[in-house]
Length: 234
Image (cartoon, rainbow, N blue to C red; front, side, top):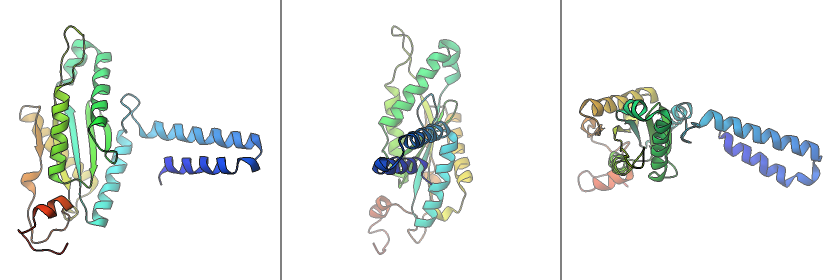
């Protein structure tokens, strides 16, 4: 159930039926709706960055896996971890560290689509679900984030510093028959490889993609790219 939409529907109905309600009852219902909306926000959003929180992200990841299997579609996931973030806290303090996290969150929001789902997954780690996005699209999004991050500056005005990030990027395909948890573990391993290979890197699952004699689970962009290689019905 989309709780936010349900609350808005109730508010809309309340506005339409306002003339037939006792003013005191109307006020109490309005207060209840506002309280439900506030509780939903607290349960779904990270208070510091304004991104979705881990609980909401994991629920959405399961929903996207179920949709991919049902519709034989794909989606991608980016896991991003800020490099050497502990050094920022140690050298500049936690308030500056918080400013870095908020700055990176704002950057993510500016560089993704409205349908994408950005979350603060933990400490200095972020996750972005990209619905209907192929491997190529996900890598393009990750590269864009990496380039934009390089232009950010934090800390003292006279001596600002920049920060980098390592990323793991993978595309979920229904034929893989893995759970949301298993897919998350796979992307987390790619992130670990990015950090182990020197940080400030993007590691994808491209080398794990096995081409088969059918196009199940390929995005529209990938189908278009394969025209003339395999014959298939549009």
